[in-house]
Image (cartoon, rainbow, N blue to C red; front, side, top):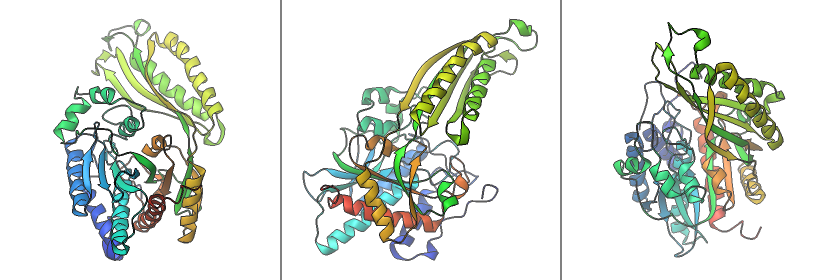
Length: 427
């Protein structure tokens, strides 16, 4: 798969509502499509605005009202019990600069189609659920253009302020407020009040495919410490400046990159993951020793003690790097979260539903951050995974089979039905 073209969604192999879902998914894949078979629709970009407008039309055509909150979170609302809180179901449509089609986007469209099926079901039998239903597209989950990640759900859950988010600038100096205004996505208020939440997502790893699991029941997240560092040196000529006189910021940053990998390798069996995903080099000229490098470095682990140990190893090395490269390293930002479980009653509910559908299932942990990792801190939240072929993600060759995303849609529909009917109220 990693060396070949990603198969297109094929609605002809399915019927009825399942075929309609795959057809809509094929349409969604056209927004911000890249030549390599992926997508580029970073938060607040024109492509993001186009897909948000398309989603608005899709939701309104099915009788949902659509609104945007104060930081651009998009809600499709189905109010059947006036005054009652909502079950929020969804994910995010924004992507990395060169991304796959499934990350986040599958979860939003699956939420919409699960809601469409339930709305039709309730209209047909005259039954009203206990809670209202909201399809949600969270703003800037990826953190590619605006940092940090999970921005929209962080404001919704009170972890960030709207004022801070709206003033955040991208590398070109464009603020979130300006980007939202340009894409007609800046609204008002704090969004609907939640009673429960649910999200479905691709796994972004290999464990489910390797173990033959169709539905992953996420029971907790890994802890993560994410840091922004600035490495300060001094500009000089790359040809004429004596090596011993150089204060090379890029050399210091490179030593941090290597240190991060060495830390990960010092722990057994992948117990700690580390990475540096972004370097901004100034002045980034071929004949100038860089004077400033900004980088983002993260450490992750399912064991908080191991994460703390890795963190100490990192910070202990900073002084050595400063001395060796003759640079100054400053920590200018951080975004950290602990290991926290999803509510066990929600995991058990999803487990029962997957079993009733005859689908192979297992409890799994999420290594990546998701909007649901924020939501579970304020309301009971169910998180589901479907497999990723070869574990590929944040890559144009990211792929999940049509059958797996359909099975996930069916499972999500059953979960949301149960949440809306109040099945977890008594647990």
